[in-house]
Image 1 (tube, rainbow, N blue to C red):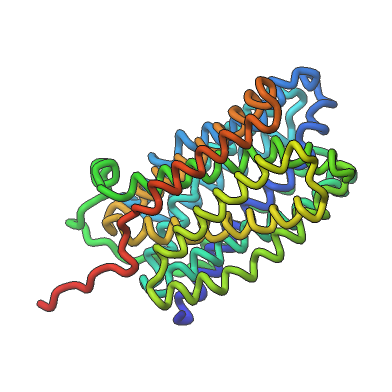
Image 2 (cartoon, one colour):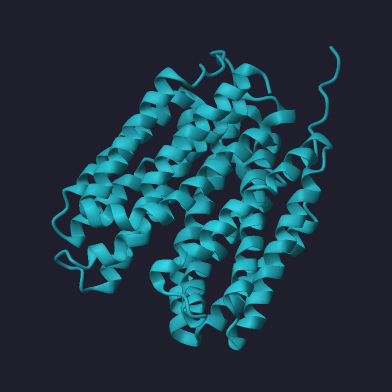
Length: 394
């Protein structure tokens, strides 16, 4: 990476980290803390307050992605972070679960993932772009790991409202990073084409990657419906679940070094297929082992392999999207991609909860295995270029 590419990658990874840390700090304690508010005795309402973020984010991803193609990435990122901060303030001041729903919905409307990822693609060369995407993935996973440890004591000290104030402050810090650290975006000529949804919907290969991120995040959310119960069944207290999650998250980071090597060798397709296959194997293993009450070491190993697959796929797919999408429609393409990601989070929670109620944990694992198999069959045939074709000499 050149110094400019390194600065762009680190600053944009920092924006993701600040935003996601605020989100992750809330999630581990949200249900327990929200139960103390008026309306907190209604699990459906509490669940809506948790999930509404993903729904409004899905609605706004494409419009803000398109807007970033037309008016500029950094402007949209700043606007989105302001909206996210405002939603955090509303949630911090909420005196009821109903107001938490409003605050979380406003938070989700500040959907800047597509614009941030598109700007990273704009500011990096193709041969190092996956490294930049992997830095973003590492920053998100690191914030998830930190939140598992920090959320319970922070909630005890400042409460749910205090966590939302911290979230708002982190969003403001993200705005400062955009304005004073992130490099200027490339200049667009006035007559340059602007992104259109037709450039994305009609693309012969992008839809497979969009389906892939939907499956990945549906599986991820459904997993959190099942795995905590398996850990309790294995003898681990609820407050100790991070003892399994945190080592698995941190240990899986080391595998990203292989991703960088694969990028240099032009083997991203092989990495994509490996990640999908590993995800499938983990889901099937959990499905087969769940009735036998797997022990903590077994569950820890499976979570380790799950996070390897998750980190690989989170870093690889946006890089492939940025290579496949026309440059003038990159924001639109990543907007669609992130919309399917958000819908996957929403669907995974809803699907997981409904299936547990209807058929128990195994029903969830059968469904996630089937989804992973579908993706494996489609992903194995994925015809994406390892590197874009060189431009013809003029």
